[in-house]
Structures are given as C-alpha cells and as structure tokens.
Length: 464
Image (cartoon, rainbow, N blue to C red; front, top):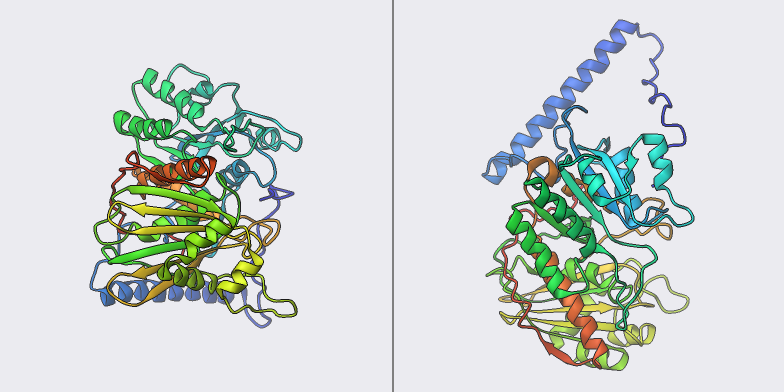
C-alpha cells in the first residue's frame, strides 16, 4: 500500500448544508441522526445476542477494538528481510504506520511501531523513506531494535517478517530465509532481559523441522504468546463458511496456485483452519506423499471422495480457465487435466484417519479454494479463501488487514487468538512434502509430526 502523497492534508469536509436550514437546525439534525443510528445499531446488536441465546462476546476479531490513546499504545519492533513495494514487510510496516480499512472505516493501528531492523536494502527500498518521514528508527542489529538502543527489552511485541530478499536456496529448492536466525536473536534479548513479549512470525517457521520445534518450545519455555502463519485462514471466505467445532469430518482439499515451499503453506493452512475443527481436534500427521504431473493425477483420481472435493473446490474459483470462447467453465476432471497437466499434489494422512489434499494447479486457477467432506452425511462444504493479489487483481493487499489485526490483538491482550501449533504442523508438512519430491515422489512416514492441538472456538476469519 502506498502512503498518502500528502500526509498532512485536511480531513474530508462536512456534508454541505441544504438551503433553507439554519446552522443550528442543521447541526441539530446531524446530531439527532447520529444518535438515532447509534440507538438502532445498539438495539440490533442486543437483539442478535438475545436471538442466539448467548451473551455477546467480550471481544471479537470482527469488532473494532477500543482505541488506546497514543501514550497508551504498546510498542513493537518489526524485524524484516527487506522492505520494497509488495514485499510482505511493506504490507505489515505500512499498516502499522498508516492504518488500514477495517469494518467500514479507517483503523489506526492499536500498537506503535517503535523500531525497525532491516536485513537487506535492495533497489527500491522503502524502509529508509519510512524512517525519514515517520521517524521510526532503523537499528543496525536486532538486539538494538528490541532494546531501542538500550540494555534491556524495551518493546511490548515483536513482528518477524522473514519473506522476500536475496537469500540462497538448498539442493531441494528451499529458499533459506533467516527466520530461525531472527528468532534466535530475539530469544537472546528475552533471555538477557529476564522477560519476554508476544512474537509473530510470518508464514512457515523454518525449512528445518528441528528448528520449527525449537521455536515453539522457546515460546513455551519463556512464556510468551506466539502467533505465526499465513493470511489465508483469516481473510474473507466466499461464502462465509463456518465449520462448527466438533463436526465429524472425513476429508479436506485445497486447490490453489503457486510454488513448492512458497504458496503451499497458504494452501495447507487454508485447508487446516477448516479441518482442525473436526471432532477430536487435530492429532498430528502419519505420512506425507507429494508428486507432480501424471503421478499427481494418479493420486488425485485414486479416491472418489478426493475427486469430488476437487470439483467442489473448483466450483468456487473466480479464475478457473474456461474453454476458448467461453466465460464460464463446467469443472470436470478432463477439463482440469487439460489446463493443468503438471499439478503438484500433497497427500497428508492424519493419525486419526483424516486426509488432506493440496493441489497446486498452475494454469487452471489463480485463487485458493477449499472443500470438506462431512463424515456422517453425504455432503460437501466449500468456499474460497479470498486473496485479491496485487497488482494483478487489486491495488491493495487488503487480505493482510485481518492478519495484522490479529497480531495487534495478541500484543494488546497478551493472548494469541489461535494456536501456533497449526503453523508448526503445516510447516512440518511442507518440509516433508519437499523431501518427498526430492526423494523421487515417495510416501514418507512422519512420526515427528505428532502435533496435537485444539482449534479455538472463534475461527477469526474476516466477515466485514
């Protein structure tokens, strides 16, 4: 998001006063209308609470939080690989500094961005301009960013954005982003200070399973709230699908686009935020099998339920490639195979018999679509996790708004709104899927992925 060209420009003018109204009568009319709207709005909220048979929740990810005064706002440090247009760090940085759209109005961040650490400064760097214009200091080390140049931790939260930048890749094709290194530098400050603060880590945790486990163990050991992962679980859902906690489910699938060790974490977390709500909760993963091309299609077509879920998910796509001369497409397996002869497929077998399939269908779709099969009914539910990617689809990346809002909620309340174990487990699935491809598309047993957790009561996806 580009900052306003003139940040000191005056606010929008008041509505024009109709002819024939005195100033006093006009103001009385405006104030009266506002009061009436407030009363109707409050009455509607109470009626909704009464009709549900429950009290309205004390806090909701969908309701704007009460704004703190600038002096009361908690301070955060943002640790980034690079800040350039459309990089993940820019999406977070500008929302903390400039605010973002939230429930029909512009939301000023609930936290104060107090410091920055930026690892690389490529051509087109935006961080130095933000430093000059907004006075947010870029420190030369992570430790100094967390201590604000002092000796002890001086911020109330840490946001780690280890995505984008010029970093090497290994033989398996994994980009070696410094997420774990950033994490360890933060832990050193926590340990030296004798206190910790909430931490958010963007996307998957690491390319090494031992490091992933250590990162979550550090949060438990030092006692700080930890949030991580993709924007997809909290973006808009079309339709606004909600899986009630404890629903018996049999299988889930996400059809998406993008690359291995890149967009796959988005697709996996899209499916997981639905399937983790099944009866018994998440219990961990028994095996992971990844394949490409013809072998991937063999895996997809081996089960009728998986094929059915694929077609249901494709029916939600806004970007499915139609036949030439048409603006709509009937989702069939033959149509899908024609336009995506080389998919990448991950088959994830959970310890309770549940099954998750990820299909990276480049050439067929350019969005994220999920479907789940109910266990005790012959019924499939589906939705799109809306990702209007700039600059191709939108001018803004507003799907980051709910993710940033959840980060703010954690820092303000001291509680993570959903469990980091979701991202821990899906990070492990990505790691073993990459390994499966590297070893020749073999099925791998994964006793390491014995990560069990319960989903939160609220799903936290954006309904605005």
